Length: 149
Image 1 (cartoon, rainbow, N blue to C red):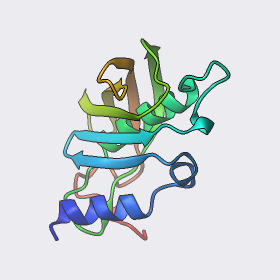
Image 2: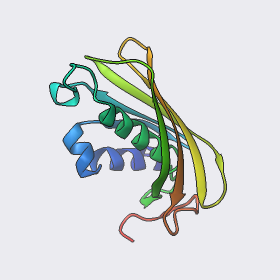
Image 3: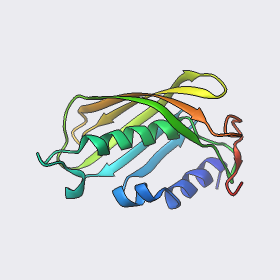
């Protein structure tokens, strides 16, 4: 298993409590790129029967954070916190898989910028986001820090 496969497998198996609760999954992860997917269920929908904006925002925030946290060293991790996330709701989804593709746009050693696009199961753009993230101490090093540090 390569370091890329190792770190992706680790994240897939050890995601956050929110990830477990909502059911989204990290399906692609590479330098400056991440993809998160969610199979829509009734509990993801608002009173109008469409994907809740808060859930979509969570997916775009998560994918964006992952896009700047890839670590090529097996067993190491990089972490960020969201400083700002601007979202735009452009469409809706009721069923199927929502896919969010995020990528790093630039930045420096401690502060980085992202862009995310969310797609419905039909491939329509349903949302976009731009984000500003700050690396946790040690995570500004592309080699990251040990997972248990």
